[in-house]
Image (cartoon, rainbow, N blue to C red; front, side, top):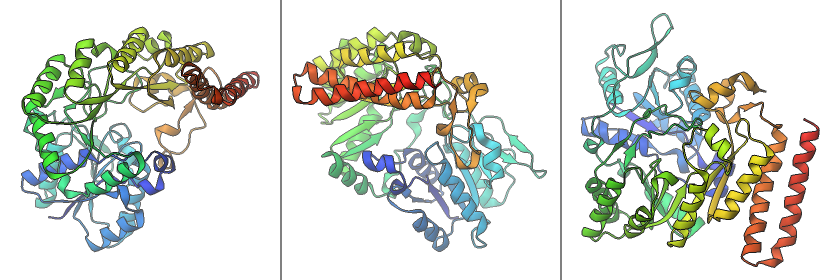
Length: 462
């Protein structure tokens, strides 16, 4: 049976990501690939990252699979729909069984099915995908498989009982990286940033309750691979590939201090040398944790904040103290780690005072890096439910994603365009003032004042 897995992300079509140039391998489908292979189902992967839609179409025509599985998230949704439309329009391809999985399918099940998908994998994908390909191979009915959504013979949507999560993710094989050309990723990173990065996962799920975060795949669970297996994977990667850094894709790497201590001991007892980068939360950081991170090879830590205003953090249900975030960023930097943080503007209820507090937060904590996004509601999250009756200028589902949803905020949409510039320019001004880089101060201050002026003007035309 010919099985093809893909993710439908084309870097060359993404103008923003072409500027960033930090592509990551599609770990999800690499895990699915390994699971199918271990259970007797060979498969191929079309890694679209460095390819094109036209090349993908030609691949489908020349190597027509019987089943195609596609990872679907906010970034890939529109391309997945484009791929489905192409498959269903070609006589040679129209009988391919199309299976979609990933975080986007749970809350948009009916739309994906009515656009041509045969089945959706709701939740964790390995066991459900295996059962689906077994049924397709034997031409059996799929209607009793747990963890799927499909259209019945009357074209009504059916969502079956959940499959249930794997009891131990230690039983999973390493992602099937041999199926893709990792060197393309390494070269892209090295050419753009001077060093190459490979991604690795140690856990699945997140038990925290941030209102804007989707839990469509793993729910609020937390499962962790053993430190030994994680270090085994690192050693295996170092044996087969030449790369500089590891990016741990986990939501909260330091969630378990016991696990982290065992991981550091495993790294050091086996004399494994590695440089890695993580994401975590301030309330799961201590001086001891920072020392363990450094001792095991961490060079950069991203500590989530989202806002410098405690009122907004509480509205998000982040359950963290903004002062603690600042202190952990400072402590990490003082200990020699690079520190980054994330900021979100435009959250419901946010005022100009809150944004000013965010500038103060960034200036006081002085992270090495920070990113800013405008809040948007993902279907299935509490933020979506809270703002749904305030949505404005909605686009048709098949030509947009949840990223395109805007809602009535404290101020108008144009206001936040200026607010993003204000934060960036004012924080840069204060950083250069602190570091006594006087040559840049006049232009940065002028830009900051102009951005602030734009914000005030937008409040007047509200």
